[in-house]
Length: 114
Length: 114
Image (cartoon, rainbow over all chains, first blue to last red; front, side):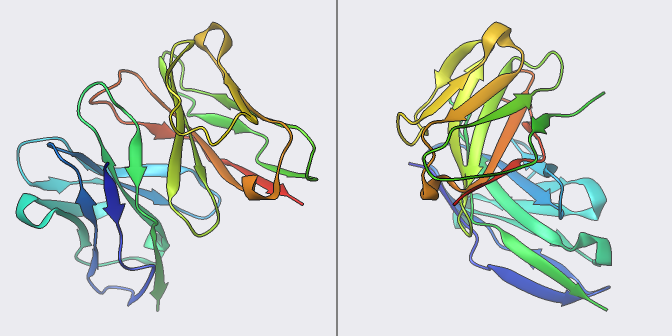
């Protein structure tokens, strides 16, 4: 069965600092990987996704993520965070063709301090 | 274009009562998904419709939950009778074509069972 681990429940960073959120997955075949963000009072918004090809994917709001098959990881990064990045971030894995449900991690809550 | 909408945004009911949640997917999206997040835990898949048919209902917790999608448009999720452990946030998502398409999420319905 597929699973996702986000080891950091809560992270606090200073505005302007760099950010890396960790995500490890377990899946037997080539995974589809996603990062979603949920801002207060909002639904889940897709930041970026990896299906195949270039292992470094660019997303919205200046985020990027790198797929590392050898480490079963898909960490999310941003070089300089803004106060508006404060939110909860979810990593998810989807199965390949024919089984479309997403399996999510428990989420990482990001707090930005001035 | 309107996004995925969910109604109500919040619901507070007593144990044993019935609650019906509604989801309106993005127009033209054949795929509709229900997910649930119990407080502090991961977002878990409940079921997947393709048009009006249930493609995968492996995540439905028990027979107190009934999902329908009449006519392949909006969907309802009924909980009857509600139990304390049903409290959480219920998300709906839709996608145009299962497999490689992004799932677009609604804002969720926050259900509290007292």
